[in-house]
Length: 302
Image (cartoon, rainbow, N blue to C red; front, side):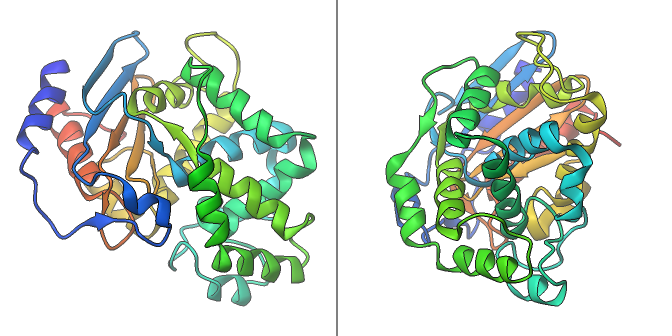
């Protein structure tokens, strides 16, 4: 497997397309667009990394998986009274679907759905910031992981659309807490700064039936691990989720920081990072990397 990863990394050194770094969050626009990393972590305790694999970056919407896992662990299927489980068919930050469907987001990985999940985290925990950090630090095995304050506050200052989503859903009765409080926690979660090595480690519990393979602690039930993987497969890459399933064949979750994490249940997790995004807000080089990975490895979930 190491040879496959290293070959892909070298093959894609001169990869060219029209992708560009996200600039609607000013702090993200400062990232070097040429950074590139691949990290694989297996249940057999093999770790393979190439490129800028120790450089931390803002994981953005990848954090939605951690938040959802915490909420499901606490309130189970109750969350599905407030958030759907279907692909959105609209932009990840669309207000139209919320209006048409009376405040119920299509899934927990579009912004509206994630904001509802964050709202429930605030209901559940006295200090949800501490809880998210504790979870990510334990899963990654690194107690130094933290929020990136510059990114968080850059997002807060440019959160007009997300704030509109919260207010609209609150008008429909699907939000409990202060919109400003929700936006603050949401922005901090998105600002989590991690490397591909740390991300690959952190998602191994979803390859292992909900159990952290390093500590043997139960992060979520096997049933919920299956369901979270299913949601990542169908909804994890916004309006590119179908094409990602077609090309890569793994449950995955992307973020506008340029990261993508994918899971091969029973075997491994893989994290890739390249900051330049395609028109769907996903890492163009990251998707190409993952397509080659499953093709060369000769296996996926299908």
